[in-house]
Image 1: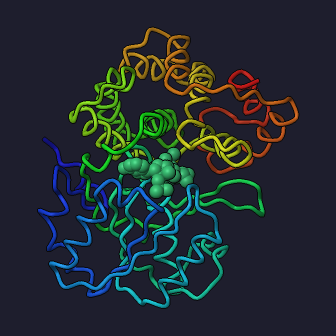
Image 2: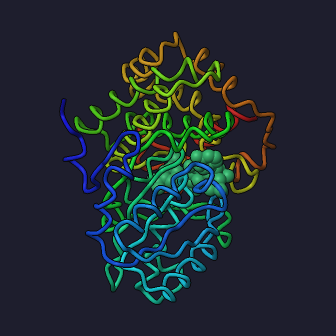
Amino acid sequence: MLNLSYFLPTEILHGPEVVKRHAERFKEFGRKALLVTGRESARRSGALDDVTAALEQCGIAYEVFDQVENNPSLENVAAGGRAARRFEPDFVIGIGGGSPLDAAKAIAVLAVNRFGPEKLYEGDYPNRPLPIVAVPTTAGTGSEVTPYSILTLASKQTKAGFGNRSLFPRIAFLDYHYTESLELEITRNTAVDALSHLIESYLSRRAGDFSDMVVESGLRLWSRALPDLKSAAFSAGMRDSLLTASTLGGMAIAHTGTTVVHALGYSLTYFHGIPHGKANGLLLAEYLRYNLQHAKSRVAKILKSLNVKDIGEFKELMQNLLPCDLKLTPEQINEYGIAASRTKNASHTLGEVSSQVCIDILSSSLG
Ligand code: NAP
Ligand code: FE
C-alpha cells in the first residue's frame, strides 16, 4: 500500500502504543520539551502519561502548560508563549484535541518571537518556530498534519486561522486508544468535523488528483465507522478507522483549505457556543445542496460512499448524530452570512460565494 505520509512534511507514526514503541524519536528534537494540553483530556486519555514516560526514558526535561481552553483565544496562547519563554524548551509537544494542538503551534512561534499574539497572523516570523510534535486525543480536526492554527479573536468576534509551512508538526503519533475516553457527544461532533474536512476538500476549487485520492480513502474509512457512530457501540476498529479518516481529512485540507462551511461554522461557535464539528455538521446538507449546481457527480459520489440515498437522508443523519434546537433570527443569519462571504475559506468554495449564498445556506439549515 502507498504510504501517504511520504507526501507530507509530517511523519505519521500509527498504531497501539505508538508513543511507547517510538519513545527514542523525541531525542532528535533536543533536551527540553514544553507539553501543551487542555485541562483534563491529556491525563484522562492516558496520552500524557505515555509521553512523560517516553521523555523520562530519553532524559528529556519537561514542563506542562495545561491551561489550553476549548477554541483557544489569543490571550490563552499568549500565556502559553510566556510559559515557553520562561522555560526555554527546544521543542513543543501538543497533546489533546484540536484546541491544544492548535495552541501548541501558536506557542511554538511565540516561544522564540517576542511579539503579541495578533502578529501570528502576519506569517513571516523573524525566528523559526520550535519543532512541534502532535499527539491527538480526538478523531476530528486532523490538526496533527496541518500547518494551520485556529484561534478565537474576540476583537473581531470570530475565529480565524493562520497557516505557515513551518507549523506542520514534525511527527504525529496516532494511537486510537487515546480517543477511547471520549464521551459519545464529543466523539460524534469531532467525527463530523473530519467528515466536513473530507467533503469540503472534495468540493473545493483547490481540489486536485492528490487531495481527491486522500479524500476518497478518508470517506471509505469514515463510512466504515458510521454504523458504530449511529449505534454508539464503539469497537476498537471503529476508533482506529475514525482516527485515520480524521488524519486523512487533515492531509486533504492541508492541500485545499476548508470552505464556506467552516467560515459559517465559526459564527455558530463564537456566538452560540456550538462545538466546532457540530457547527459544521449542521450546515453540511445545505452545502451539498448548493454544490449540486457546480459538482453534481462529486456530491453523488460523497452520498454513495456514505451509503445514503439523497441529501434529505444525509440531513436526517446529521440531525440524528448532532441533535440541536438552535434557531437563528433573520438578523443573525444576515450578519453571519455577510461575515462568512468575506473570508478566504469562502473563496475556496465552488461558484461565486456572495453573501446571499451564505445567507441561503444558513437560513435553510438553521432559519
Ligand atoms: P477540543 O476543543 O480540543 O476538545 C473538546 C473537548 O474534548 C474538551 O473538553 C477536551 O478536554 C475533550 N477531550 C479531548 N480529548 C479527549 C479524550 N480523549 N477524552 C475525553 N475528553 C477529551 O476539540 P476538537 O474538536 O478536537 O478541536 C476543536 C478545535 O480545533 C477548534 O478550535 C477548531 O477550530 C480547531 N480545528 C483546527 C484545525 C486545524 O487544521 N488546525 C482543523 C479543524 C478544527 P480538555 O479541555 O481537557 O482538553
Ligand atoms: Fe474543522
